[in-house]
Length: 104
Image (cartoon, rainbow, N blue to C red; front, top):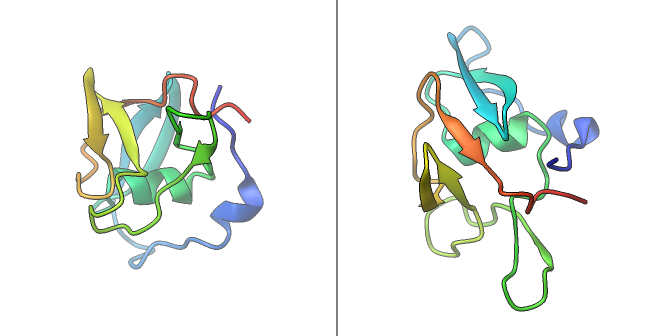
């Protein structure tokens, strides 16, 4: 199961609090985020602080640059591996898999 930190999510607030909420799932756990969010933004808003593990040493990794340069936000989305979640808009019903990489 992915590591979640609700105190972290307090640091991330939606730009439009009145935006419609989109339902999605992270490793089978239902979640919601405002329409217009990137997947990485939605994960951070939900309190996920570890998105993947570094292949070389297993170090925890999380979205960093939020503009597609660092590749720290890779996850499996709707069965497609290595999706840059910072560049991918969240859609209703998406299935995001952190593949156990989010475990603390």
